[in-house]
Length: 181
Image (cartoon, rainbow, N blue to C red):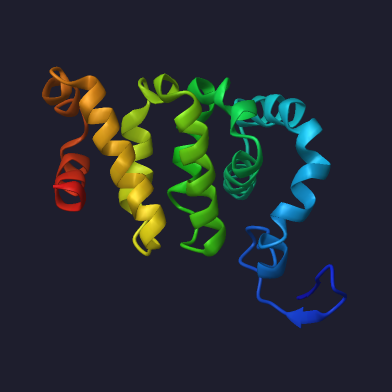
């Protein structure tokens, strides 16, 4: 398939069916961000409604997760109010997405969203941890976001962390211990 970037240059790019976005377009978020900022709260509400439909395709769910993460980089507050309804489907779908720069950005965005409403992940923190543990090729800044999320959550759940953590599936507990000690 050929994709045409905003600069008009056409390049050949193999699509994996996940709506891969051109790297040049990824880097232009700062230019289109101000234009869409006013629409993000309404978009956030609609994306959450789509997530919560009974049946959506895996590809659509992954694209939603990438989109939520990217928009979270621009206006995390708009998504933070929906975090409790968003984090489980977001985590389940992003966990199986290819390890790409888009996925890195999605995790950066969800990190910002979580920073605006940390209590929004309490109920489904294990799903987020599972998505984190499945992401193998992280850039150092994204790995630091993961580390900080786990540390902050563990500290806020203390002294009940051990009890909470014991409810995670055993394989996830092992992955978390290996990755975060």
